[in-house]
Image 1: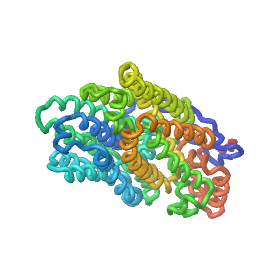
Image 2: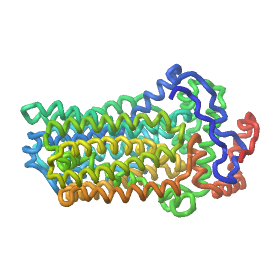
Image 3: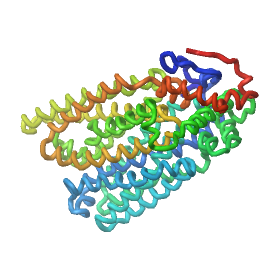
Image 4: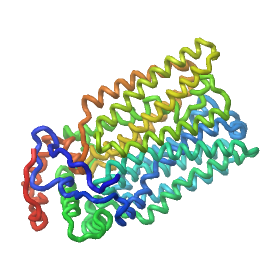
Length: 532
């Protein structure tokens, strides 16, 4: 993020698609020095840390449970949970997330992005304290459900807030940093449990549980300085407030800027289109070809995220390591910490090239490399069984593949976040995030129960299923995913709508709602250009 300007994109939105009437955002982004030279960018990027860290709670939880399984005081206190009981503990947070997700989209549309995010942070903090104070299995499970509920609110509000608040020159890069907060939380949990495993009391597991709320507390502190989404403000009749926030955070308070006026114009136009098409219902997903495309894409992403083999590592790393002949608890804790560092390093690098190479390559190539790692993992696991666990080098070969897989799947995650936001219109954005989060939880339930049973019964052969699925994902992305590189949110939405977008905008002009007519005094500033 060394500049405030994005690469100048190709203007064509789709073959034969015409950009009518006004410039695109890239036309008015001017080259400047590094973002750190601007007070407004420091202020904005600090504020949106409130949303950027939301995945950290989930990442902390996934790594936390791995660590707790290697702490003797925890396993003894809860009577050595395994199999279905371990599966119940794993899905505890997912249950809370799913319940919250059902209503979170409505809350974000009704009250804005800030309120659900703030409430979610405090629920996570309370749940973390209750988890640390647990005296029995039921209380521990209840605390995990509560943490999941708060985290579910945060995870619906946060991606939308990032997409709608980030500076347009940094939007994709900022969004690509959202997913890496998951392994960041995992790093903290892994090394916390490694340190507390040396304690000779129940604080060896209570302290890591209490610290689960730290990220939520940091989020809330940043949220105090965070503005509301300009798109939500415009949609709720507060255009002057939205313009003021954009002036403050996107142009350092400069009152004479084409960028802010063009942003307001595009936002207004998209919202008017949504209202004209009555696009605020869930049934809208089935009304047009573009929205049906959005719907099936959102069915795809939770599957591609949760049914890739990643959950084997996120929640069941000790079982994976045991199947590779690595049974020492101290070694397992060290590897748990190392895997999360690897995942974070890979994922955070995505911001360097997400705008350079585009979305499609950064989604497809990592999935290809994950598939290769699973194939090698399967072969090595079979050889380990055949050798009767007498060749430890094969076990560490599996560890290398685990690191390799975890790194590349988190690059896929990082690239998925901006793509999911870019495929949506304003009216459907919260609903799409709900589908993304709820879909992940539903698929997560299945894998959380299936993985420990399948790994215990059929071992390495279970990995073959994920190899087949990953190949399927690669084919789907290659054939059906359009590129959205270098465009604003409103411009990206037109890529998915294609010719339907042209027809809808003609209808809008016939209704007298075109932004060129409403803001003639503003658009007079811009030369009219038609780009194909």
